[in-house]
Length: 157
Image 1 (cartoon, rainbow, N blue to C red):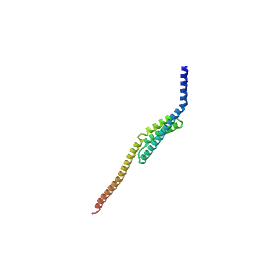
Image 2: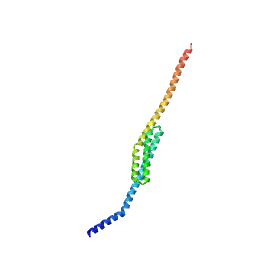
Image 3: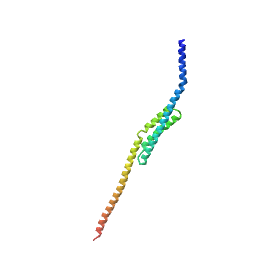
Image 4: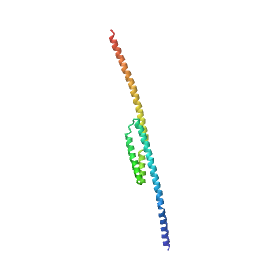
């Protein structure tokens, strides 16, 4: 008789757990869903910030081809994350979003450094062109004046 009551108790506990199992599954599903949404939104925001920084560096005249390759790779991971999210594979979506974010580490600082270098090079080029042109013009005038002076001196008997 005791074995029967133990079995009934086990069956009762099993049935109760079975009844509440969907609740546990839904809670973990919601947690994965919200984590995946958050990871994808964060990765997308970082990617947009990086594209903005790289665009500014390119406008300044920097060579950003290496950074664009990294951005394209990160964009590929973000696309894979969104695809995984859409099919309900939230763990893979989180993984791809994290890979995207990891690829973007340091891109903004590199873009800012390249932008600063390009701006400095541009101002140096302007300075060299402006000062070089002025100095060249002055040299031509000086040589022309000296040549005129000697030619004029030669004409006078």
